[in-house]
Image (cartoon, rainbow, N blue to C red; front, side):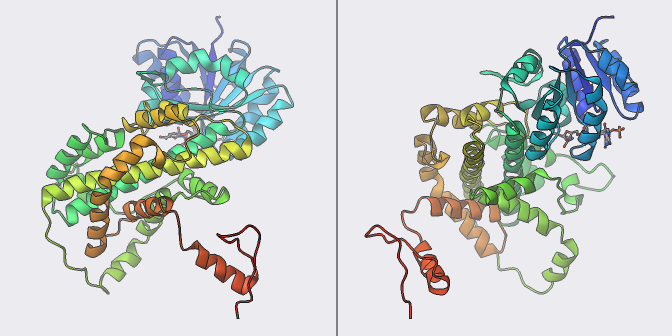
Length: 470
Ligand code: NBP
């Protein structure tokens, strides 16, 4: 029997769809899963979706034996211990030169630990971020593989075919060595958190201050999706506002959804990494804090009876909508600037030599943060690969300058109305801090020296100083 080009272990939502995607691009694939039910389901789907070249194996030995050498095996199981368990089952059956590709949302040091361990048996290891959810996995995700460059070359013909395709190529490239692929996927998810928070704030402000109905909000987001905010998340938001309740209640489904946001690990990791590398990730932080506070539903309900809402100001609806659009765009620039700066800091720390313009390019399609805007980010890095921040790119700086009055109006209105907009206001504070030549940090240094003799530098002469403050 002809050997399969590639194997895949883990047939839940992502694995099943990714395996079918690979098969539908003409690469014969073998699949395996811990519990056999998902193998049968995947084989049945492969048949239904056009007799795709996919073979299921309940026995892991038969699965490994069915693969062409060097073997290429994608793992798409739950991140953490299940990945270790899967590797432990596979490694005794593999040979030197074989390649394991973990496609899960993994904490990057885990990938580096596993890569070092399997390298003892001559096996190469790739940590590959996969974004796009179920639909992306099936029809073309954005792929972020990190690990040895020669191992990437061995999977390149396959991943370039299965990834989303955009005007300037497939949404995949060799991200860098070690855990770089997982790292970039982690930052992608942090940015995704930020985008979702900003969109939610735009909704809150337009609904509460502007009095927009769900139908009007649907129209606004549809319109926005045709301009500079064109993106997957804005597009799905416009559809969410149109969806009627599916349980027989009057009105729209969105109004019946409990206001408590769930999360997995990647957003939190991004914030932790920001702190670790001293990179401000204000917008993503606001998103995470927003999720934490949303979880305190009972406390919020109790607190709501203690305080009165400030009166809502009268506004011109059309002007408000246009201002919010601009505030959202400016905040988004800040959020992506923070993400790119985190990527650059990690790249320097780990000697990964990451390419921010290339990363922006592979996020243009397939993934959750896909947006027209990413093309502009790519171009900013083409203009200057060493750009210290997207905020100072000539095009983005011009756009921020033109929109900052609207952005300030929206933040002012939200403060005045008692509507928290930590993403908008945090992004504005980030911008206002970054763009100022002098900050009140001189006073903080003076305090540090006062109580702890931490010393300070002076603006008028070289050296380290400490004062006798009293
Ligand atoms: P899940 O994260 O829900 O994991 C389920 C899979 O893990 C099943 O195949 C299950 O096998 C397997 N598994 C578990 Br649980 N414990 C195992 C063990 N000890 N040994 C072997 N297999 C084990 O699947 P998913 O949602 O498809 O996600 C897969 C990866 O992709 C995750 O890292 C996820 O974070 C990432 N990801 C998910 C999405 C998304 O939209 N869902 C998007 C991007 C990335 P069983 O069938 O025998 O229980």
